[in-house]
Amino acid sequence: MLEFGATFLPDPPAQQFVDRIVRAEQLGFRYGWTYDSHILWQDGYILLTLAAAATSSIKLGHCVTNPGIREPTVTASAYATLHDITGGRMVMGIGRGDSSRRVVGLDPVPVAQFEAALEMIKNLMNGREVHWNDRTLRLEWARTEPEIPMYVAGYGPRALGVAGRVGDGVIIQLADPEITRWIIERARASAVEAGRDPDALAPVVCAPAVVGSDLPRWREETRWFPAMVSNHVKDLIKRYGTDGEIPHVLTDFAQRVEEYDYSEHSRVGAEHGKYISDEIVERFSLLGDVDQHLARLRELEELGVRQVNLYLMTSSIEDTLERYGADIIPQFEPSAVA
Image 1 (cartoon, helix red, strand yellow):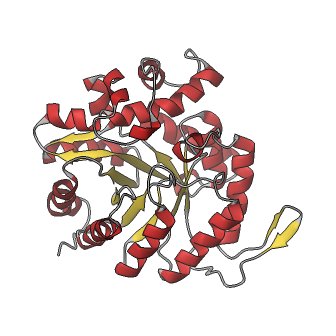
Image 2 (cartoon, helix red, strand yellow):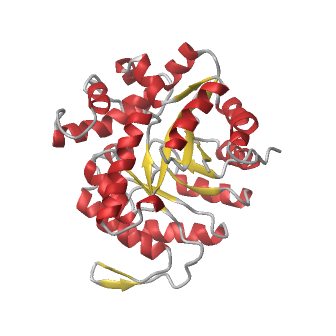
């Protein structure tokens, strides 16, 4: 069954963020997500705490946090605390750190360090004993049931290897079926190599979404997204080149993005969107009328995607939220529209 999530930026006013999460819960969304970039926006951990107090069933988490801005035991403790507050409703999306680290002059966390931190965080936040910095640690008060699942974000072979070895799922930040298939195959191959069940690894597709027929307008409002993806891909190009195992549909467009301004990260009208073609915008995002959305969602579901997480960051946030609740989510599961 395909489930649905909604991501809202942790922008002020805080009450607006909370109200949107509450409405998503009423409309049948199973997951409420936010970003974690503490300079560009307000602190997502605090806003999730407010959302937790205002909701009762929706699962909450970051899409994504990282183990490099906060000391990893702090991240684990924060999630364990929220898991207790919510009665077991936390989910963790985690990556190597892009905007939150680059904005303060740091590179993404190296992959080996990333994997070690994820193994520790997953165990510690779920109440298991860990060994960290030559210390034996355990959160004696942490819930052990249900477990907090960890979804690992990545595009390249090494990060996808971490997802397969450590994660409960893989976060795919684009809605292009061809690239999605490749990412799922790489992550699940790593799971097999690690002796894990590849089918237990849940793929989560995350992409901007607008339900509406005015495609030229919505392309302009989501053009920032492939430019954001290009930042991650450029790191892959430096390591793997453009004639290796990374799909050309992922590397070709990224090379055309000449500059990126983090002050416009995930913002409608971002200047770096000018490097992105209409074709790439439509491939990476979920745009069009209800039937167009359903067709793409069915295609992603057929590939094994378990959740589609809508990045609601346009001028159509409320309308798209309502349209999904009324017209799209009921096509995949019973809706709880209120």
